[in-house]
Length: 464
Image (cartoon, rainbow, N blue to C red; front, top):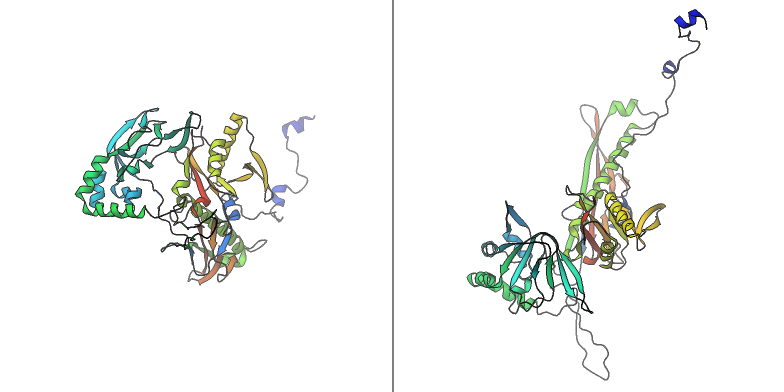
């Protein structure tokens, strides 16, 4: 090596450099990318029903026994009180709207604290209290066929039991209710309830009407019974019957998600190569609208799946994390469960519980994808199912389709300027700043045809 080369290590450039050459070259570009696009399995698996009139009515048989609701509470420090109007969720008080009487009744509840293992109500004892679960988890225990202790149910925040204490003949407890965690319970003595009823003529009249309605013959689903004779011989008198319908069936109005897309005419005119600016703007806006549509189908307080599941189809986990036992219980609540939807972290938590027990979930092929399955049912990821700050989520199981009396999606096809089925991109004009506006709209909803079509596994711990 010569002395001159050491002093001047950079040799003279002999050709055009790449940095300068790029100014004359045409780069290879991708379309605009977007992180917010997900698989949107819910939109893909729901069977969509055309709603021409904008409203979808679900006709059902008349039901006498209205589903028991959950009650809400107010907490002030360590003091817990029931919200008075929420007492109308109890079966005997369903539809009772006298706020003064409900407030007087709420004041008579007594707050009680129970530790894990404490017996809240013992089988065989008289039903002399109405209990509201303000916080915690309790198990409902029953003696099995061979004398062993069997857990037949779980009670969590907002549940209630001992409703028969409001009846004329309350009877005795059939099961034992035992706290599984530290529980805060509000108890209403039967004597206190009688005092409130004696002081309120409106409450007494309502209770008499409720007791009269409870004498109507119903099937095990609470529907008005259809009298049928079977197994007879000869010429007996056959029963006459008819099928009664709900007088005020549930109606679902199509909801809407909309936005106004704005594009400057200069951008649309001059910068359309190699790809259309307007087309890419519309494409990404539609993706965001579809994401919002799936979010609403899960979380909307009116028609969202998490809010429309019947309370008898909501079950808590036994121990916290989602176990195979919990999934079996969820699936067993309905016939022909088609799909299970869960947050990806909930699916991972379920996989950990399976590994802990040496159980291997199914690997199913669904629409060209390999997904986790359980009992032959696909478990599809849905990140629209919320995860709370406490690290809990929910798992949804459903039967789909009108023919199976399941869950259906609702939309309207045939919109003006339709861009995709049920989604339109409508030109709104150009303003005085040369900005074009497009109205992007989609109309949708979801309907649960019968209560057992949809079930939810609640309080699923995903961090343990």
